[in-house]
Image 1 (tube, one colour):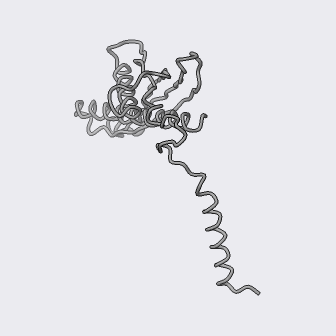
Image 2: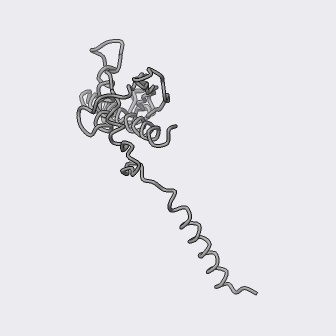
Image 3: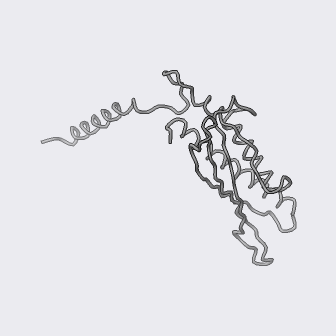
Amino acid sequence: MWSAKSRIAVRLLAVAALAGLTAGCFQPMYAERGDGSPALREKLMGVELPPVETKSNASREARIGVEIRNALAFKLYGQATGMPPTHKLVLKFATSRSSLMLDPATALPSSENYGIDAQFNLVELATNKSVMTGSTFSRVSYDIPGQMQRFARARAFRDAEDRAAQEIAENIQTRIASYFVAGS
């Protein structure tokens, strides 16, 4: 008969053996490759970010498009520009805004939700073929500090736009990095 201590020791030994067998399978995403292929950082720097097309250049959507593009450039390149492009990222998005809570006395919103739904397409420039498409979304909420404080409300709305744009850029950067590492 096995004692309780020996059963625990056997289980721990089995877990340690399985962990040792799978330890060689893990490879950090941003690690340098020993096979001479370019590292992920160089691949990300080869993604061209054309300006996001919007209906009007003087609209809120145009500002959000610039915000998403700038955030993506920083996340992909770590600076304002990359290397000679190998891929192009085409981005389209739509925004939404909805009231979450209404003030019972005035029937005006006291908390709102702002959202961005984005579709992106990564095109290989050498073949002009789409190699990856995807979509992502972001929903952020913001409080309206007071009904008579219109500038505070405008600033809260703009901060929500910026937070949503940063989240969209982060999601797209992660998907592109995953594509370059895993090929899917």
